[in-house]
Image 1 (cartoon, protein in one colour):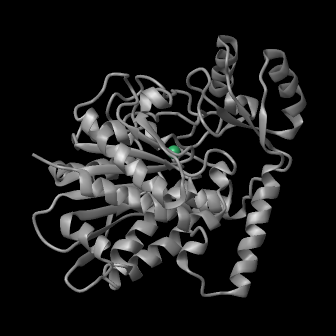
Image 2: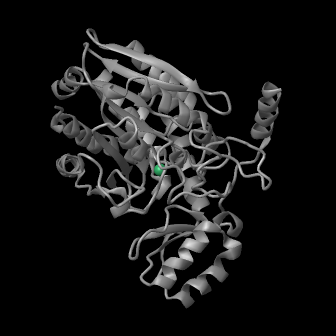
Image 3: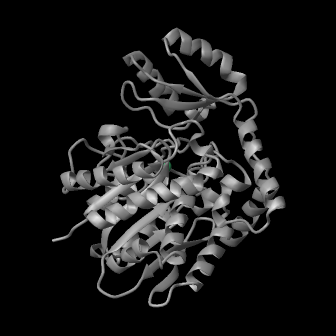
Length: 420
Ligand SMILES: [Zn+2]
C-alpha cells in the first residue's frame, strides 16, 4: 500500500507544474513600533492563508524581515504598510525573472563547457550523491572515506553521511546542511569543505585538519524537500511528510522537530505554517535518523555545525531561552576568532551571539538539541551569505567565495577548540 502511495504521489509530482513567482515582490520590512511588529507576527502566523512567503521570521524591534508578496495582493499590502508607517526596501521586483535569469545562465554555462567544476552550479541530490561516491573513491592514501546510509526519508530516499578519518581515537566535527530545502548555498558550501579535505588533502592546512579530527558531513538532511525545490517549488523550506492534513499542507519545519524543548517557543502547531513543529518530536524520519546516528556515540563529537542561509550570522545555542548554555563564553571566544578568519578572506562580515539574543526565539532546533541532549561542547549554526541582496536565490558564482571564506572559519574553529 505504501509503495502504491509513493508511486501515485511520484506520478503526481512528475506531472506537477513548477510553481512560478511571476510578479512576486520581496520587501524588507524593519519594524520600529510595537504596532508594526505585532502586525508582522500576525501576518507570519497567517502567512499560508494570506499567500505571503516569509524569507525570515519576525523577531525584535529594528530587526529586518524579508517578505514575499504575490502581485494580486501587493497594492492592498502596500497601502497597509504605508498606513502602519513602514518604509519598505524592495529586494526583488519580480522573483520569477531572477529565477529565470539564473536558469538561463546555467543552461548557457552547461552548453559552453559541459565539464565544469562541480562548484560552478548548484547540484541536484543525485549529482551530489554521485559526487560523494566518486570523492570517497578518491580518498587519499592513509585516510579512510566512507559514505554511509543512515536512514530513509519520508519519500524513500537515502540519507547519506560522508566521513573522513586518518587514524583512531579522535573526536569528530559534524557539519550538516539543507535541513531547510530552499537554502541551497548551505549544501554547496558544505560540499566545498569535503572537497578541501579529500581532494586537496595534500594542502598542509587541510591535512592538519584530518590529523586532528575525524570529519562527519551530512550534506542533505531534508532530501525530499531539496528535490522538491528542483522539481516544483524553489521556495520550499519544509519536509514532505504527508499526513493527510485537511488543507492539504505537507511537511513540517525539520528544524523545529528535534526532541529538546519541542514546541515551547518560536514554533507553530499549525500544519500550514513554515515553522510547524510536526505532529510529535522526531516525527520526521530525516530528523530521527540524525538523532539516532549521533546518539550512537554522542561523546565522539567535539563540535556540531549546522549550516543554513541567509543573513551572515554565527548563532550559538540556545534559541529557546535567553539563558546561556554551558561553555557559552568559550563558544563566543572561538566564534570571534572564527568570524575574523572568515572576514580576512573576502571582507565578508558575520555577526555572532546566541540565537535568542541575535535572532528570534526558536525551539526544537538541531542546534539546541545538539547542546541539550548529546551535550556537544561547541555548537554553531552558520547562516551563510548574503544579507538579502539575493537571499535564498544566491547566484552560483558565490558558491566558491562562500566556500573559501567559511572553510577558513571552520578551520579556525578546529584549531581553537579544546577538551578537558
Ligand atoms: Zn534555515
